[in-house]
Image 1 (cartoon, rainbow, N blue to C red):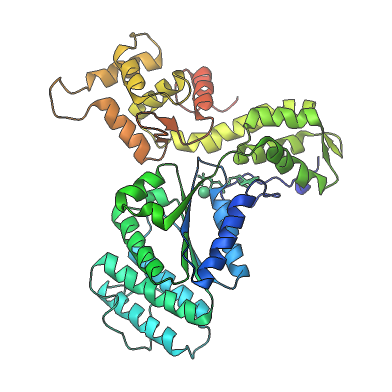
Image 2 (image 1 turned 180 degrees about the horizontal axis):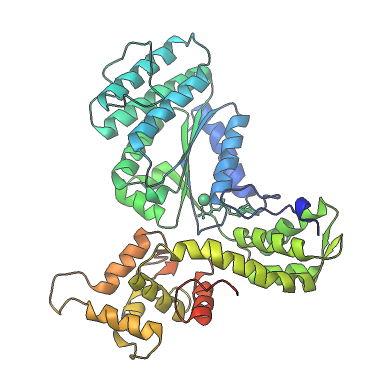
Length: 426
Ligand SMILES: Nc1ncnc2c1ncn2[C@@H]1O[C@H](COP(=O)(O)OP(=O)(O)OP(=O)(O)O)[C@@H](O)[C@H]1O
Ligand SMILES: [Mg+2]
């Protein structure tokens, strides 16, 4: 079918042609925005879910909802390079500009800008593009040099300006599992302070399933600040609609058997749905129909694309020992316990496969009994969690953060006998 008209959208945060199955979250955000606006007690939102389920897409929708209510809105993605204090300064500056456009800001906003200037001077943010110029610093609320206190001071100022303008502020924070504990803690203190004052400042954060635990460790009152919501794969009817609706709009019909086939392959995971939908469209040879035969042709293509991209990039960030741990997890089936993985590494009978050799190497690195050094398999588990590849769904258990990653590892070993990339086809 005409690739130019292909509506499907595999990507990171790329808006899907039909956003389905997320009405509950969208409605919850819409209600929260209005309650914040009225000064009613309300919590911020924390979305968690596996890779590719649609967290970023939802945060962007929340931003649109905020725009619709004429709120100021600032989006942050936590990367390793992010400079947190600079980002907080840019956030305050951005929302103050949005709330008080033009050169003659209202008194409340001028004061807030003065507080921000004081913050910038204290924290030595002297070369950023977001410097407050032409205003006297207002010392006191945000220049103690203690991050918790100063960030709370800033949030109170911007919240007060928003309230005076009769609007609110939405801050979206993506990949929040990457936020260092100190910074997560400071943000939570700031949110706590604005919620005590019932100011209209709301955070919508998203991250991997480890985040609620990280938030709880940073501050014990996490569950009173945030409404936690797990974002899952799509239910059967929603997954069908995600494929059929965009095609319908182009006058193309999915045959029922074709939909069944894609659902079986993707298990309703949104990223995979977009990837399989895209390939099925491209290979279909009738102008107005996608059939089960088309899907049969598309499956190996979509799978190869996922293996070379979505899955591969995760594996490339791991050491050989970590790959061994992952391979053993995959061999044990769904969400094994860490002790089972450790046991398998201890008892794997030395065969000639790459796993056999890799396991022998790991055993060779085990610290001697009664040493205080951390067990090698525990270290591997912890580093895989820290890298965001695994998470403990329950105490002691361990699972992949990437859906269907175990199947990918099996394919990979079948193809190359190990974990290397398959050589490009001759
Ligand atoms: N509700 C939905 N219906 C259909 N497709 C969706 C839906 N949500 C997201 N998608 C599609 O799924 C893909 C992944 O979305 P997104 O990048 O938001 O996931 P994510 O959870 O943020 O993933 P990651 O953890 O890797 O950042 C995109 O191609 C997007 O278009
Ligand atoms: Mg994302």
